[in-house]
Amino acid sequence: MTVFNARALSSLVSVAGSALSKRLTVILSALIKELEGPEVKEDEELESAVDEAINTLLESICDAEGLNTLMLLLLGW
Image 1 (cartoon, rainbow, N blue to C red):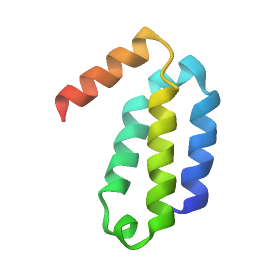
Image 2: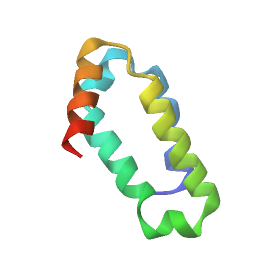
Image 3: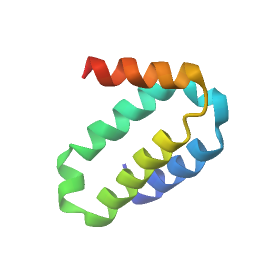
Image 4: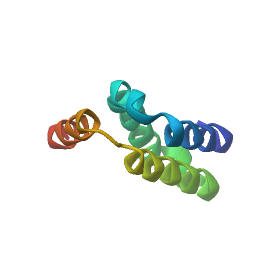
C-alpha cells in the first residue's frame, strides 16, 4: 500500500455512509494487516497515513449494522 492509497481510502470511507457496513470487515482487516507489516515500520509517513485511514474508518461507522459488524470483528481478534 502506498501513502496515496491510504489517504484515498480514508477519503472514501468518510463519505461511504451506511454502504460502508458491507465492506467493513474487509477494509479494516486489510488496514490492520498493513499496519502490522514490515513496510509500515520502515516508512513513518505510510504508518501515519494508514493510522489516519483506520481512525477515519472507525469514525465513519454510522449505523447499527456497522457497529455490530465492528464488535463481532473485534471480538474475533
